[in-house]
Length: 66
Ligand code: FES
Image (cartoon, rainbow, N blue to C red; front, side, top):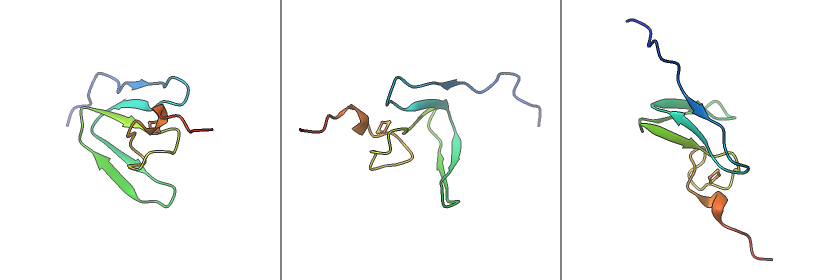
């Protein structure tokens, strides 16, 4: 199989937001579990508040009441 000549693109997040990665991707979790997404663009959670971790569910946008 010929290599894809185009490098895979990763977009760095705004502070507290997700990292955007061109899919499909496999993500290895801390415990070695592999999770896969076949989406065209995958948002990876960096805030660890997602109920769908390691994928972003937009929980980073919600503010905690004080
Ligand atoms: S970055 Fe979006 S929920 Fe964590």
